[in-house]
Length: 211
Image 1 (cartoon, helix red, strand yellow):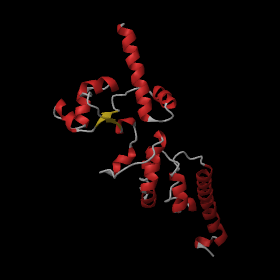
Image 2 (image 1 turned 45 degrees about the horizontal axis):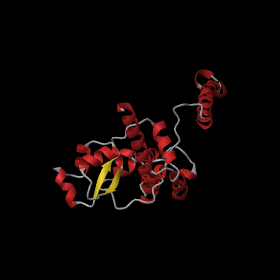
Image 3 (image 1 turned 45 degrees about the vertical axis):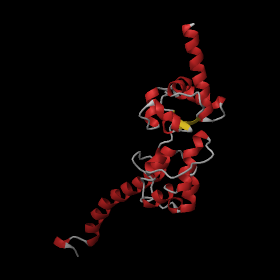
Image 4 (image 1 turned 30 degrees about the horizontal axis):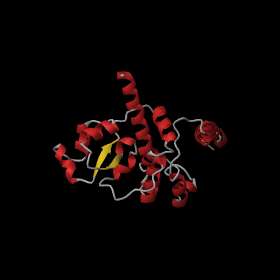
């Protein structure tokens, strides 16, 4: 018997009716998470049972196909992902891929080096001959004299006589993505060849303009 002469079945019945919508709502939320209807649901190692997200071998296979920017983002997910994404071999491969580089020599002073592989991070190594001057190299590669001096830590033009090579910056080559891809295709992905082709075309345009 319940309170005030009520039957136990009468007391339990409203409780069961109140619990039913809660069960339905939780089921629907679970379904939305599975089907991806909820735009705020994010799958990560913390809220997923996918074994692939916590298996280092599978993560390596996935990360090896990512560009540098996405690889850096993956390192921010959790400690496990960071340890895999920070692997030197994976970082070097992602860094080399866009430019078809043969290899990377030496170790960068900062780990942030691997997060940016734009052309501005590269330089042409020019072997000097007796007739070379800083000004002539600036004209040849379509760069500024001060940029060459800054990159090579030169205080004056006379510093060229004590060197075998000079680094020529890429950072002055500011073109849109389509133009860059065009010259890279001409040079079969070689940044140095693409830069030389672009410089030759610029030189020809200037000659025609002032002719």
